[in-house]
Image 1 (cartoon, rainbow over the protein chains, first blue to last red):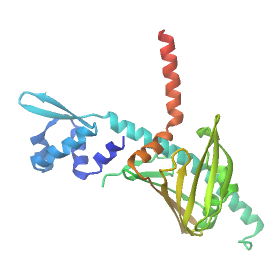
Image 2 (image 1 turned 180 degrees about the vertical axis):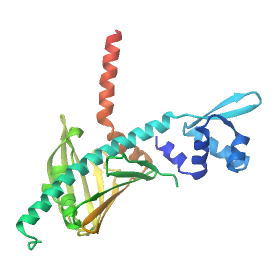
Image 3 (image 1 turned 30 degrees about the vertical axis):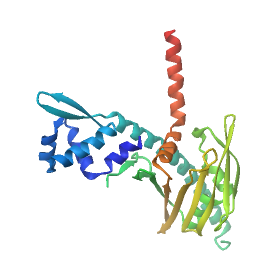
Image 4 (image 1 turned 90 degrees about the vertical axis):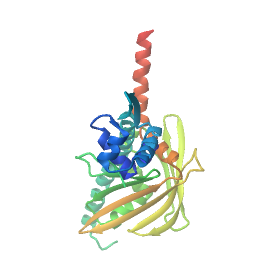
Length: 112
Length: 166
């Protein structure tokens, strides 16, 4: 799953993924739109394909690359869960901290 | 660098994947750093927040010797299982900065390096916890365990579905 993130960590690959959100594109089309040369685009697409983020469809003479949303969705879901755990921890910590501050105020601040 | 962020609008907790083995978690508290630092480190306080109710785990024992070379151990019970998180402090600057390892007992070979900073400004404290995992697989494991609860519910639903199909 982290392959998803590693694949997206490269700015150009991220741009490719963003472009593919609008629909399938051919390699030369991607290169033109993002001003990258074809070997570069092919290399990035290979990484994205290995991470399961894109699929290839042959159409007429071309190979069209399209986005697969599933790995992105899963990574987002995992992050959300971990985020939720920490959010709950911090909520409880916040409550505790308010209490500690109240206590400090009522006992005066000279002790610490 | 592309950043994967997860931040819901009502929550003040922010989380960021820094790389494929680093997570940054941060939050601002309305209190001076010394109070936030105490809440983070002192066992009697840790007990109050570290194991949220929805996480289905109880903190049964906490020990922490918060000084350089000192160690800590959080003992957790969940269902019929007991396990520990433990580690050693390598840097302790009161109210400012902590560096320690965090090891989850079943996986002693995967220590997470945690750096926590407490930055006070105008009576508020910005806390940042920087977790560095030994490998991307270890980070993935931590994220997946945060998901365990939801996964179990899904499995239950699947069980039900399968049962109804028989």
